[in-house]
Amino acid sequence: MSVRDAALVACLLAACTDTLPEIRINEVAPANLTGCPDVFGEPDDWVELTNTTSSAIDLGGYRLFDNTTAPDQAVVAPGVTIAPRGYLLLWADGKIQGLDHLPYKLSAGGDSLTLQAPDGSTLDEVSWASADPDVSYARVPDVVGEFTRCATPTCGAGNDSSCGATRTGRRAGAPKRDPDEPAQ
Image (cartoon, rainbow, N blue to C red; front, top):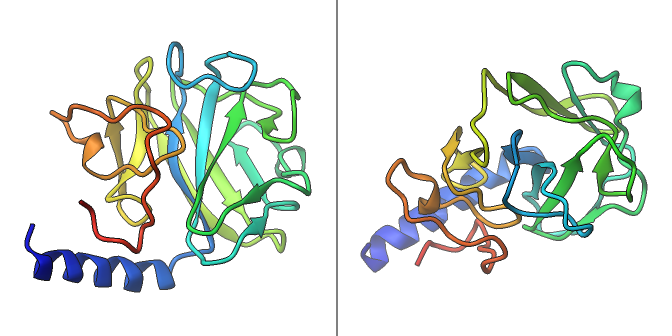
C-alpha cells in the first residue's frame, strides 16, 4: 500500500468512526471451545466491544443482551471501562465470575445480540444463523465493516486482514491497532 493510499484509508476510517456510536459490537465468538480463555482459563463464548471515541467510557448501565435474555438482566455493571479506541471482551458463559461476565450463553445454533446505551437507544446489533467451533463473526474492516466469518478469532485485537477466507491469522493478544491509524 502506498503512503497516499494509507493516508486515504486513515482519513476514511477517521471520518467513519466520527459518525459511529460510541460503543460497537466488533466481534462475537458464539462457539469458543479451545481459543481465547477468560481469566479462569475457561474458553467461554465472548463478545468484543470497541470504543470509537478518544475517551475512556464506563459501560455501567449499558445493556448487551441476546434474543432470549430480558434487557434488564443484561445490564453491564459500573466499573467496567473500555479504553479510548480500545477493545473489551465480555464473557457470555452464564456464570457471574466478575463484572466482565454476562448472565447468559450464546447459541452456536443461531442467536443475536443487541447493544443499548443507558438511555435505551440501540447502538448496535448482530445476528448469526449458526457458528462453527472456534470461528467468530468480526467486523472487517475493523470497527467499521460488516460482520464476516473469522476462522482465527482476534479476541481483544483489531480484525484487519486477519479475518479473510484464506488468512493466516493473528494470535490472540497481538498488539491492538488504533482504528484511526493506517494498517501496516
